[in-house]
Image 1 (spheres, rainbow, N blue to C red):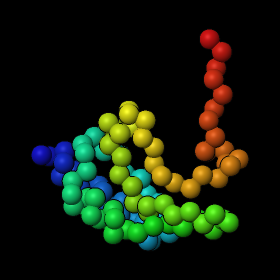
Image 2: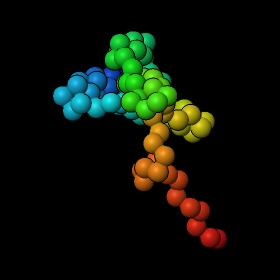
Image 3: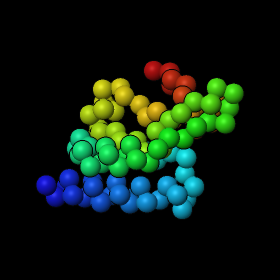
Length: 94
C-alpha cells in the first residue's frame, strides 16, 4: 500500500509539472499497475498534437508499468527522424 501511495503522489507531481514546464508529453514509469484514479487523471491531461503535416495526436500524460516495458510496450510519443535521443544505438560486436 505504501508503494502505491508513493506512486500516486509522484504521478500527481508529474501531472502538475506539465503546464509550468510547457512539456508536450510526460511519461510516468511505475512498479505497480496504474490505479483507476491515475488513468482518469492521465485521460484528463488531454493530447499533444504534432505540428507536422501528419498532425498526429499523442496522450500528454502516459503511464507505463515495468511489466508493460518488459512486455515490449513503448510510450506513444511523437518521433522525430534523425533526433539523436530517439535513434537506436548500433549493436556492439561480440
